Image 1 (cartoon, rainbow, N blue to C red):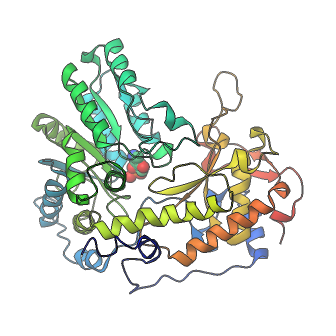
Image 2: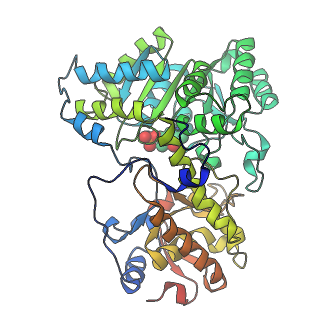
Image 3: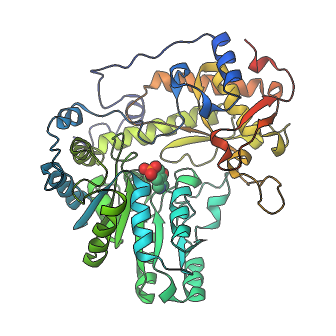
Length: 474
Ligand SMILES: *Cc1c(COP(=O)(O)O)cnc(C)c1O
């Protein structure tokens, strides 16, 4: 069954392994309406109302389409405060698929990161990781830890096509452990896949090497397994010896190298809300339950409704179906391939959850101070009603000491693909619009702030174009 279409890659890429039973209408807007909506949103895609968005690629987090089995499972939700049957079904799914004996649910991924960091990290500790993630690093620092980046150098280069760009650099990791002293390294944080690098995977070979290095120094490994299914797909596709293995088997092997994991179920597990912390260590589990009652809820619900745990339990089984995950990753890649064929600069190789436009090269006539990625995201919305997100100078904020903007190497527009939501025709609309804008790129002007908040400015800042331009007109 799983190999039915292996001989026909083209078919596999084009055809969705599901059909549509229930539909959510999309409002079709005119260019004049979109130009006005963008002006009112201060050229910030976060400030658009979703009713004005045609294809929403802001994030793949919690924006997934549940299956008929998941919707049915909602009705089985056992909303008991304690001893809920829904909890036990969720626990069994995690035990079977992740291979971890102990699990606590949390309201979402950051809830699990908070609990884990508070238990294991002490003031002055060092937490090595394969590139940071915003909430993960924040919780490590709140607990008194310091994040040290130990990802391979290739990850920081948007044009390097290394097949496992999320890999840990073993020399950097060993140096971080030796410098801090193993007793000050509570765990190594390994993300599968690496979100901030563009959804790049880690190989099994690298995970085995990280495990033996950590064993040598007696250091634990906690994975951020938020997109570990996408990682398993890349292993199956790219790592010699894994072609014939099922996603389920590879997934379980990946997790076998960890002492535990934190998960945002809003990604891999195809639900709209939820997360969890799983571990093999009974002591950590006991400590987690104590903190859970303070911050999340009783250990049998952890901030979720019984019905949420039911949908999650079903999603955990659906996410490791080979045909599902193959289509998911190839849909993302298909969009990337269409852009590459037209010469549009994007981050390569295309990762598991989105396509990242390289706004520095796309708008090479703009200085980074003119916020090219923010301008490109705004122009894309006006052109076709497609909503992406800036990941560049605006997201990076200012240096607290000098007040100057940070100038990150990568100045990107992220087009993140929700799971099972959009069809190939929607992807065509996105590709056509980006290619069209690429032809008009010299017309896209930079932006300037008209309102700049102090913290996490990308969420609420407002802008205006530096000059009038047809790309922002009706
Ligand atoms: C989304 C995400 C998180 C945080 O999860 P939330 O459910 O949003 O709290 C942590 N790590 C990675 C890699 C993520 O993408």
